[in-house]
Image (cartoon, rainbow, N blue to C red; front, side, top):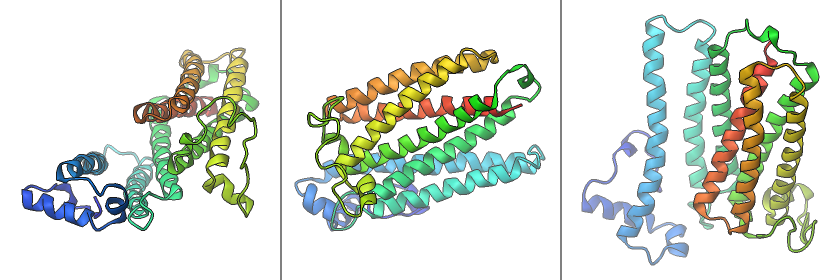
Length: 304
């Protein structure tokens, strides 16, 4: 889909003539000319419906959020403290739609692939929106009166915040891996090209470009961050075991460790199997699951 029509774009092509017109428009862009020149109309419909479903889902989320918000707001069911938070959520969702189209536009130029910067920004904003909604929801779901029974020190509380922040950075590094297709470069583990520090590491000038534009460095960074998360989360779990936590928080701690091992296994398998799409998507879902538990622990440990 090479056009963005927030309102009219809800309706897909309905007739053979409309399909042909949309296909001819797609044929004017480099992605067709350089990558899909042998594609026929039926093949085009396959990629069209995939993108169409994604955009329709995004619009649906906005509508499903907006109308209940207005209804409960008008009925006086929304507290004063919650109102600005709901507005922020809705605005962020709209910005995500704009950012998604900005990302797509980067692939409609001479190089038919989206910018890794815009892809990662789109991914990062999705996680930010999710984190904000989840944090607000947990604050509403759990009252403060039960937190006094927890014996969480300031050190462990800060540790939980650090882990959540580093997990988010690791997710962003995964966005650059996906945007550059860096997962296809070194499909061995733990070594890269038979070395701990691969050849070509930090070859670009200036140095900062390597962390966002060099395939070797980007994959290496993601491995290092993932390894760091494995060490830190395991240490966090070991420390938290000695603390008197609420039952729900203790269960979440054990899930945190379980999800960590699953995510590491998914990441290594994705790499060794040459990045199959279904496994890569599962790995991304695993990142969200791990991030969710981390958010929950940070929110619960941060309450007094």
